[in-house]
Image: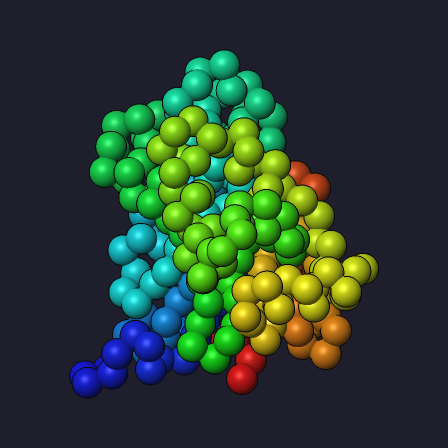
Length: 243
């Protein structure tokens, strides 16, 4: 759209893809890149056979933002420490994806630079998992907790801190059962609602919780998911952000 900035575009959220590139292509057909700001919630890799292909596609899609997921953290961990390859493969890692990443230093650097959180102009906080564990990276006096968290995530990924990040980003969706923690997290980050993925839900559309203050966009999208083997509607994972 000539004359339209990314900030002015409607927002499209893409939950956990997990290597199902073919289904991602199909899901995005109604949403041309030039008409949407697309935010990928992380976990593009593992389970399915096209994880690195999905990462490259998300990177190259116009007007897109890609967040760091715990499976990207595990893959980068395995890349830097061969002793972690077995663990990573046990959670769905595909060795051919790791081999591809080894040969693509620019892509590895780009992955390590991904933010953990994005706060949108309308007050929506976007993150990978439905947890407030990110708050462990906030220090007293931080003027902008979201920016501070992203800065410390970047430092951890640059200094062998993958184990800490894995723990922070692999938790269950605590917002569903503990609305008081959700409210505190929104207050801490100066947000009005939070969008996330990571733990599959079973609705036919993104799962809105607590009056829409939390929305889960992981509908078990990948046909290769080991723990959630059903073909969910693509609209449970890929959908416009509600107004």
